[in-house]
Length: 450
Ligand SMILES: Nc1ncnc2c1ncn2[C@@H]1O[C@H](COP(=O)(O)OP(=O)(O)OP(=O)(O)O)[C@@H](O)[C@H]1O
Ligand SMILES: [Mg+2]
Image (cartoon, rainbow, N blue to C red):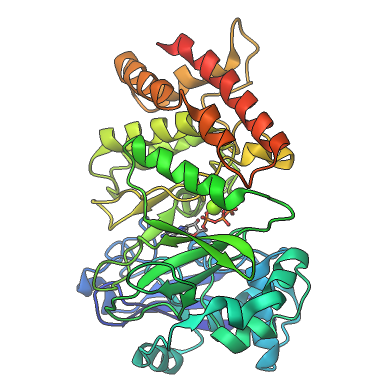
């Protein structure tokens, strides 16, 4: 392959400024801050790449055909079934760009669609493209999504093989987020979902930026309603949870979730997954299901650079999220479903996203996507889950009384979980029964912790 250079910018300080350059060769990927960037005191590429610490050096990712985890987060994964990736590659084909390999496709996607996505890092082919993109702040009119997309989108999502041109003609290239579920970053009217969408905001606007998650009804019937119920439950548990609206796209149920990675002036707020943070420093973390949740404690406790200020709050947050994930049958709390928001030194866990009880679906029915507390490692006496919960509390330096408080609160909160699941009309009976059984089992076992 030929070496590729990409230009990295950010609007995190309000105005668009160049942050640095990414240089990709056939043996590594190299990121350097511009000589001025550390003086701006703006957030760096990653929480662990403080601009001041890398003033005179280059951050090298020593793996051929791969990029720093932070950049990978901006590219839809190379999976044949990935809706966003297919959409963006169709967009590139329209522009006459036909990448020769999956990695070339990654680079082309990063250059052409790696900006305006989640968080504060924007990638462009060159500085002129960046300047042109920031200069155009028009998000276009609000368009009724149903009429424009109609049956073609429904077809595309159900079978994932339709031509993406329909969506491109109506929307233009929308920035993308990672993940398996079809989703679009769009803006909706200030009063909430009414069936109309526009491109995301680039400046302060009355429109609300949302992640629009569309249900693949064939594979996951009832998913949107389940996610909504789980968001409500997390709010009741005291977590910060974004506003959301039930929506419908081309006859498919959808959820429009307000984005929390923009402040009220529409300035991007840094948001970084624990996957990106851990993978930046650990060679054994390659996928978002690698490692253990216990290793997040090391991120919370990191002193140089200091990331999280309120460590106790972060430890309690994580423990509570994991226990609520167990009790609700989430099963999908992997390192990309947990993120820190804010700048180094003041970062904290982000509001909750993606808490959907995926164990309702047989192909996702596992206790937890990432192990914790040495679960299943030693076949000692008693319930392995209880041992894991106790070990995990120890990893997070939580006292027995902290654990008892959290467990009591969550057991009480989820007492009526079976009724809540049962009330979801769009969820088939067998999925309800599976989820309720899983919940009852965990609920009963966790009572031993108090
Ligand atoms: N409300 C939000 N505000 C800002 N960013 C968000 C929001 N919701 C999701 N994200 C970002 O978008 C990414 C994908 O969203 P989400 O996890 O909800 O989708 P998903 O398709 O279910 O992902 P997966 O199936 O891979 O877990 C998240 O990892 C997060 O970085
Ligand atoms: Mg997710």
